[in-house]
Image 1 (spheres, rainbow, N blue to C red):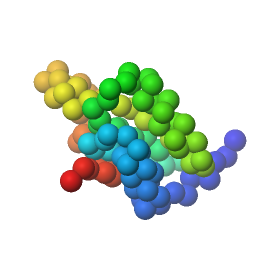
Image 2: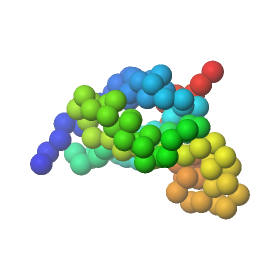
Image 3: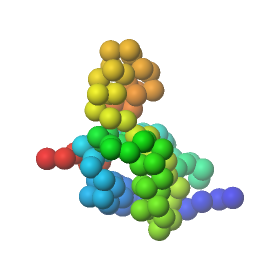
Image 4: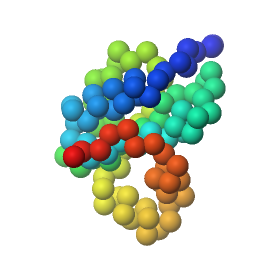
Amino acid sequence: MKRNNHITIKEIRSIAKRIAEKFDTEKIIQFGSYAYGKPTEHSDIDFLIIAKSKVHHAELRYQIYSELKDIPHPYDVVIREPQQLETAKQRRDWFLLNIIKRGRLVYARC
């Protein structure tokens, strides 16, 4: 199934802003093929959401998907708390370090 992958950075930032306004979000980093300038017809929009959460990450993820059910583009979210990023740096977690290094910051709390 072919998808319409024509999404602009403005639209991506708008999605990130919606997430940030609804949930207690510190930063949102876009990663993956869209962030790296190599999307294909099968690409989704990947977000690393850095947030302190009072609920389990699975519940927060469900809430985010429910809030964004009107988004016509496929997307995925990875949720981490700020201290988890610090631990990832200390443990040299390749996945998160790669996102931090190559990802595109699309939201940061002032």
